[in-house]
Length: 107
Figure 1 (cartoon, rainbow, N blue to C red):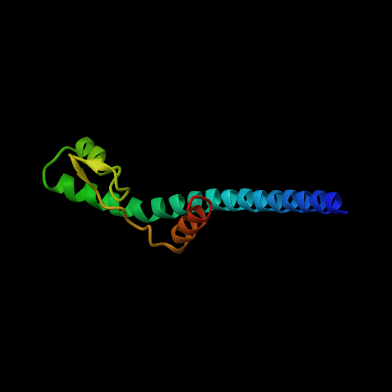
Figure 2 (cartoon, rainbow, N blue to C red):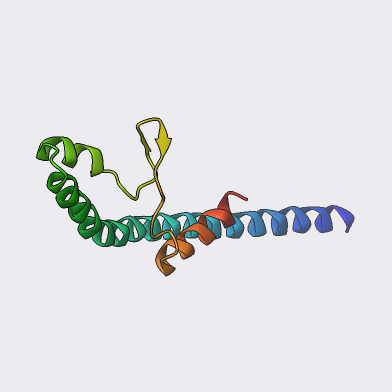
């Protein structure tokens, strides 16, 4: 009787682990989808700001190609001239959801 209990216990553990792995895979896929949506929404919001920055830069007398290169990553938080730029629009609901999902699979 105890051998049957051990086998049933092992089977139950296997089923639970398999279900948990399936949930993690689903969460990982949802996180990827939300991250892509976050990037798309951030791009949509950042583009007009970047364009305005380029116009201001050109109005200050700099060359257009220089201004476009300088501001192409504005708002993405990438290094510019040895300093970190601002990370903008990570407070969008879709971005916060992506972060929450990513945190669930990578605590």
